[in-house]
Length: 156
Length: 286
Image (cartoon, rainbow over all chains, first blue to last red; front, side):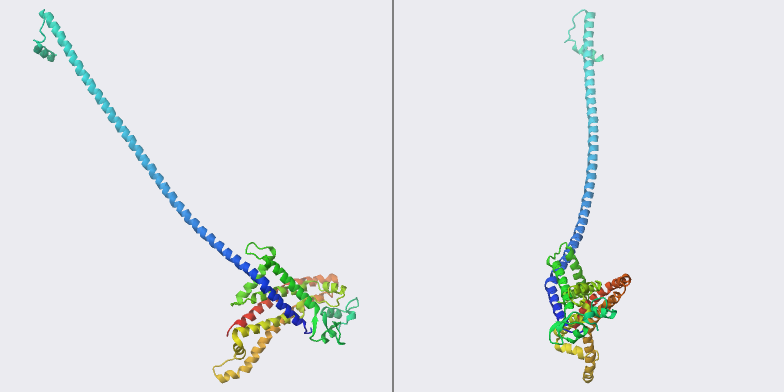
């Protein structure tokens, strides 16, 4: 346990190793550590940001989806309304058209009845005239007796 | 005293065996004026200060080179991306040391981090040599013709004192640099006892100087002797265990080695931590 030069030798080698460590070991390692720390912090912040962005996007998508759904419901309701209206219109149009046709036919029928009646009257009058001719045995002057005839016809 | 002719061979007594194991390989000037390796403890101590323990220096420098080499390998390709195995290990150590430094020292100093790392790893490696069975390396050395081989550098008080005195020099340097000569002197003389009265204040100077002086000197001495004492005692017990018959040794050496794992890590950590604390105190203003 003698104190000797070993003490100085150890102090010198200590200084050399510390200087080596200070120059070649510590700065790169501590630099790498700090850099990685910064990278991880950035990564975590980015993850945080993207999570927030995702949440916002989700909310937006939900909003859009809700709007779309409302719009679709509205469109369906409108279509339903339009459908009802078209059907109603068609129904009323058909009804009125039917009525119109019916009225026309009725008028036609009445017209025909009138015509038929008229012609019947004519025929009856001519039959009556012919009858009268036979009875009188002579020609009745149609034009001279038109007034009597017409009066007759109207009575039939 | 163990004499050189009884250091090997079967006729060695227990006392000679122990003394042989505690003897450094000392190179210096012998009594007859020639330079060479001391044979025996008496001759080694007669060499005085101008002698050197070749075994301590060899192992301490070898282990220091291993430390630097390993960490240089790790630092050379250091990347902020995915680290390799060596870089991972080095980063683990650097981060641990850096954390210890930053927990204690709140200043800007480029030296303290690398200094603490060097102490932690180097002292740990030197302590680790204690776990190699005590006879292996001395036996190998004896076969190579080397008479003495003490493989644990930290069981040599010169080694621990060499480091602690370097730390002491740094304490003085930073004290002077941060506080200035006047501030440092005031710290040594004007506290812990102080007074507003000028006369009493100066009357306390000798007392304060004595207290603070002892405190200052105690720092490197305690730092060195703590490490040295722990490792020396551990080594001594390993040597004592090695005196048992070989089939009984494991019963004691295994528990002691396991316990010693704690000691070698703890002592390296304490040396590092105290260095940080002392240098922090040197940076503080009072």
